[in-house]
Length: 175
Image 1 (cartoon, rainbow, N blue to C red):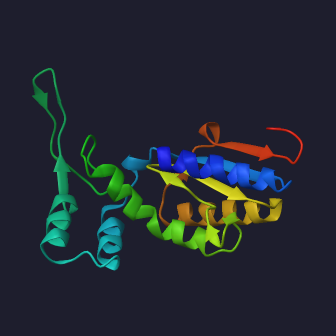
Image 2 (image 1 turned 120 degrees about the vertical axis):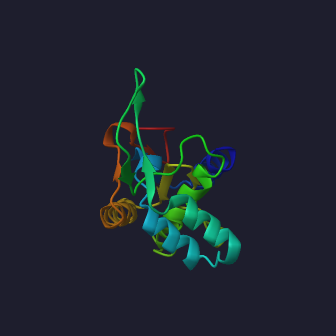
């Protein structure tokens, strides 16, 4: 979170220092780790060029998963599940970032995010939290639309109650 927070802080400072306003939307993915589609994840891992034994290992970890529930010494039947990364696994946050990596690429190449020194700084990410940073309201709306369309395609949601919009104007800290 330090890198994403630092990026956000420095970007806001950069724009305010130049007497420009900047819009920030903080998006929180609803049940992010629980909604990762296993087949989509494996495809995205392969698309990134991860193959061979590592790809096979990850494929075996997430293909044809079955589980059961045990309560009061009674065990349920096994059931299949096709969504979610393993809770508590050291890999889970990294696998989620792989899952949304192409969203970050789309946002970064949209031309709508904030730029500093010819570097796109418009979408810092930490685990399931995405900050959208844009110098214009229309650019921000475009970035939000990109995120919404991506979430529909990949079957996950952003949590409106945990998401926020901040406007840093030329004259005041926040509105």
